[in-house]
Length: 438
Ligand code: S3P
Image (cartoon, helix red, strand yellow):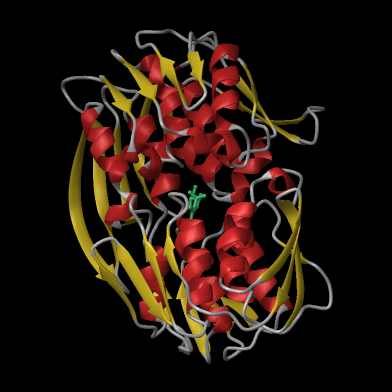
């Protein structure tokens, strides 16, 4: 059901009714993180790349549009997105590079653009404009880049020019920052290296190798020589684990659930959620698995096991690995037996919204008890929630997380600003209606 709402800045309200069970199968749409990287690298490469199952989300399309503004071109041919690259030369755009809601676009593009001559200005929406960008500017400046921000925020103007290699210690556990550095290193003079103490998602490393670049990892150190050229590829994007997370968590809410997810990306740096689902009482069967360009993908079947929905404490590097899945895990926390605690997740406060504050606010709106911490929250188990009015904050993951919480509530839940789901997963509400048994 859809209605217009007057909530600030939002237009679409979704009403999610409780469900009796959650059953069915779906092919998970293309991964957002991998699609960004394929868009950026195909746009820089020589030749035409053919990318099947490119993400349908708005964010990777922001990356593609920015590359087009700098000389790449793309066209869609059925399930294949053809991207013709600029053969290594990005041209300053005639206008602004609009990154929309996408932090990945702005941060990774900064590294890709910085070695190219000319002035490039990136802007974003209201949410992106308050997200931290100094984390990109600092390392790129040590490589010789000239970057202007306003109080550490977008708009970001890059005065491009030659860069030199630097040895870094990863300043923060962030795949976006790592990617900005290695994309710049690919085009710098000398060999750039980065010590990554907390291992973050490694899609950029796989994608660079797929496009023909050489980079090496020795223990925690990643090295990339400058002056390498990229060549077009044919690739299929695996399904997005962070989108699948909503349905994996929904499967934990009902004793007789059964969900089969096909084409699911299972890169080990993105799959910590599968262990957490098992720890929470889920049963996962891997039905098949394959690999392309270093990315694993396959089919899994998920049910709630005989122990029922238990509980878990999440902290340390596990919080970093699960950062995009924490909102939905928190949203099912009240329905667990033993509760969920989350710590060491302060980064959640600088995502598309302050995800700690919004999860806490929305859980309370549904009648839940929850304790907020600066770096996480405690959600006691054994709670019964009522339907409530959810403020999505126009954040895609908050929208979808509370649509899942709504499935076990005692009445209907209204989600304000539900259009935000399209940032990563435009098909979300259609699939939800298909799999929820009412
Ligand atoms: C992403 C990295 C993570 C994640 C984001 C996508 C990526 O951000 O939250 O949704 O594709 O590299 P950080 O690098 O800021 O941790």
